[in-house]
Length: 122
Image (cartoon, rainbow, N blue to C red; front, side, top):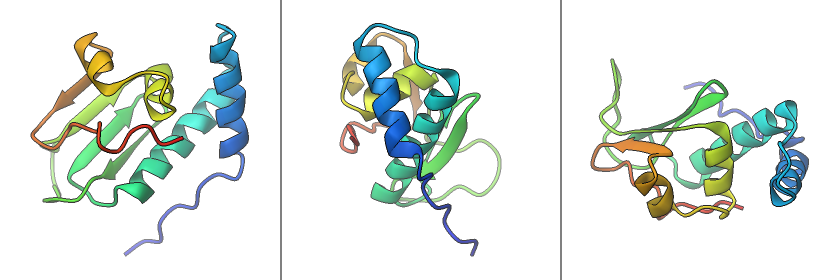
């Protein structure tokens, strides 16, 4: 089994930088947003280990997480997909799961795709 990827040491600083920009209603720097999104996805995978759900934040990254039956081929049965800013807001508590899903900012399919029990992360 491959070793788990180590969290980016720049992650916490990028989360703070992006959070500050969003709190000022500024566009976050692209590089900081990418780093923060990856870091927060890695944090989710650490806190909810498993392979039952695939969380996709294109074009930045994707992780598998949440305990339960793992998929091995093709499209997984439980998928969550959103954009980088929405994922950042969800992961940091700036946006609630139900509100994001209700607004169509998050597409969640499958019985295990509700991440509300795992969010916010930071």
